[in-house]
Length: 148
Length: 193
Ligand SMILES: [Cu+2]
Image (cartoon, rainbow over all chains, first blue to last red; front, side, top):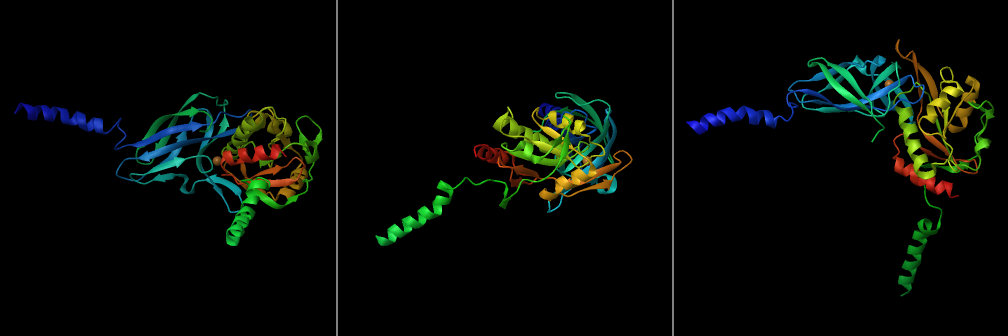
C-alpha cells in the first residue's frame, strides 16, 4: 500500500515537471526584442515568437508598450521587383493555430511602435502586454539589442 | 594521349574563368556597368551633393525613410556590419541613405538617423523633384500609401542596396534578403580594384 501512496503523491509533481515551466497548455510570448532606436527615429519594430501550446486556435489582437503612443500589428511584404510594402495585418490580428508557433521577424510580421516617448537603448528591458483573443493578457519582456 | 591533352586543355579553359579572371561577385551585377548616376541632393553639411563627390570610393546606396521601422533599420544595421568589418575608418566605403520621404526627412534628420548605425554614414535629402530624379537611374520605385491615424502615411519603396564602384559606375545590386556575408565578400573585392 505504501509505495502506491508514494507514487500518487509524486505523480502530480512529475507531471508538473514534465510541463517544463508551465509552457504546455499555454500561449507563450518568447524572445521578444527590438533594436536600439536610431537618433530621432519616431518608430521601431518589436519582434517575438508566439507559441500556442493549447488545444485551440488563438490570435494576437493587440500589444501595449508604455513607451509607444500606438502599436500596430504589421506585415512587410516584398514583390518580385523588390518593392517593400508594409501594412496592418488583415483582420488586425495574427492567428496562431493550436500547437503551432508564429515568428515575428525583420522583413515580415512585426509590431510597429509609433510615437516613441523616449528612444530605446541597448540593454534595456521593456515590459509589454500582448492581448490574445482566447488567452487574454500575457505579459512579457522585450530586450533591446542588435539583431543576431 | 592526344585525347588526354585535349581534356586537359578543355579543363584549363573551363577553370581559367575562375582562376585568372576577375573574382565573381555575389550580388546581381549589371550586365553593362552603368554610368555614374546623375543626381543632386542635399546633405546635412549644407552643400549640394552629387555622385561624383564620392568617386574613388565604393558607394553602397539605400533608398529608405526614417519613419520605416522594419526593413530600413535592418538594412542599415547590415550595412553598418559591412562597414565595420571591411573598412571601419570609412576610407574606402561610403554608405549613403537617400530618403524617399522628403516631407518628413530633412537632410539633418536622415543624417542623425544613419550616423546612429555608423559614424561614417551619410544621409541625403532634397526637394521632391530632386528625390524623383535621383531614383531614376537606379530604377527605384517609391510611393506614399495611406496609413492609420497613428502612422498617417507609409512609403512603399524598392528595398535594394545599389553599389557604385570606385569609377562611379553603377555596378552591382543586392536584394533585401542577401546574406550580409555575401555583401562583405563583394565589398572586399571592390575596395581592392
Ligand atoms: Cu510596420
